[in-house]
Length: 115
Image (tube, rainbow, N blue to C red):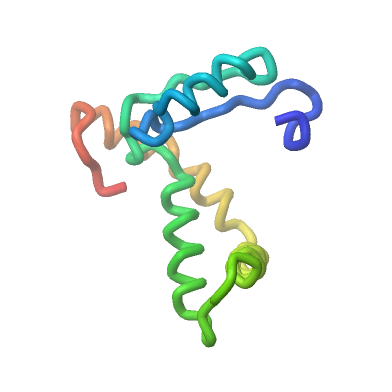
């Protein structure tokens, strides 16, 4: 977190998915809780998390590569290249979609939404 937000204002967010609530992850979060603020998120709610859309977009771009990545280094390079190729404004559009995401989730009473 100190690399990303050296001003100490960073927040950690996760969607409480089962892998994130393992004993190892829970222990790590407890041990490092003073390093960042933890944003409490509705349990298992990818509907609200724009990172899901970013991962999906990266996956689609990387899957179309020819030849496909064969090693972990190839995959890292493909992900970095794909990230750099996102249109300017892509992330801003996702951030600006958050009010609509919240409204959809509230209308759905926490059930799945179009997001």
